[in-house]
Amino acid sequence: MCKETRDIHPILSLVFSLLLFVMGLLFVKSTWFWMYVVTFSVLFLLFRFEKLMLKLIPFVLAFGLVMGSLTLINGSMQDALYAIYRVLALGLAGVLSMSIRPINLVRALNQLRVPRWISLGLLIVIRFIQIFREEIKRILQAIALRGIRFASTPALWSRAFFIPLTVRMLSISEGLATSLETRGFSTDSAGSSFVVICLKRRDLVFSILFLTCLTVFTCLFLRGH
Amino acid sequence: MKSFRFQAFTVKDIVFLAVITAVTLLAAGPFAPIVMTASKIGPQAFAMALPFALVTSIGLRKVKKSGSLLIIGIFSGLVLLLMAPVMFFNQFTGSLFSEGLALLFFKNYENRKAVLMSSGLFAFFTLPSTAVVNILAKGKSISEQIGNPLTFILFALGAIALGLIGAMIGNKISDELQKAGKM
Image: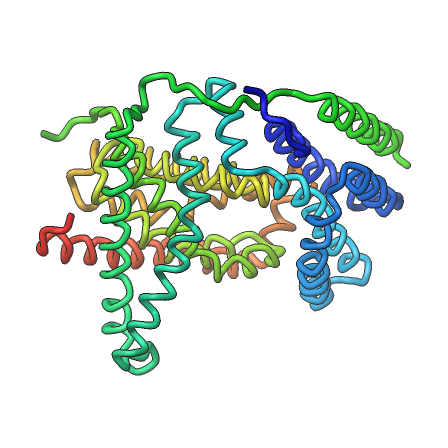
């Protein structure tokens, strides 16, 4: 079953995100860099990435200001501007990479016959970051309730933090591995997917527009403008 | 037996290494602003050395198979690829070099020193790839990246020292859990 979504194909998003960031870093010192940012921002708006862009704006503003200010300590205004431009390049790439849904990325990787241990591992890492953030919060609350403070007893605090965390890591991974094995998951057998991620017309249009814009800017860069 | 051998990874190993990677990334999270704002090479490896070594050493004590650190490097690199593409190469080469060196000396992870060396030097070995990526992507020369040589040497040595301290703490935690029968 081919899943109909408005998202761009995950592999395309990933590749374009990489291209956008790497090329952005190359173009940072060009006088037309702002045009690069505006062009791709317009392209993203056309393809309805406005929610993600709004989410990223505070990060880009805050991080850009921090980067610029830190660069000003040792460098000139021009260097500070380049530092802000680098954050803008990161922000642009971030729009595309944040649009990727982890499960769709894993499905697309499976379709590309990427080894299953890689796609499984990637999915676990992405999913478990949030789970362990919660676990860490709970462990820290328990430490606070027991009145252990890092400033007064760092060794005891570390022990009270790392031992439960490692035990949780072990028990969660054991449970997850058993659950995968009982469902017949194996690293050496090919799996099947109920949902197929396929290339849509929208992906094609996006790719053509994206690559055209990128080619124009690369030509400008190579001509030394 | 002290010889190099490659054992296949089971689902259990892969899951544990992925969970370890998630915790490693979380532990290194608070240091991310330092990494992203540092304009010279050295501070990044120095800041990441302790959390990376501590958590990965626990992973290597549990999954004592050649290639475990490389798998952690690939997983963390793939996740970081979505945020900062250059980090993938950093993680991949860092894990490849440090594990390669440890296995060259100790052949396998049965020896505790191999775990210490492999996870302890992980952050330090991200320095060469950072330098190469900066040259290729930002056009920065080596001297421009290093800045003051003395500061760079101090940061590099600090990354090794903190990495080894982190790996020692990780080993100590693993010992304790092994005694308790949890590992």
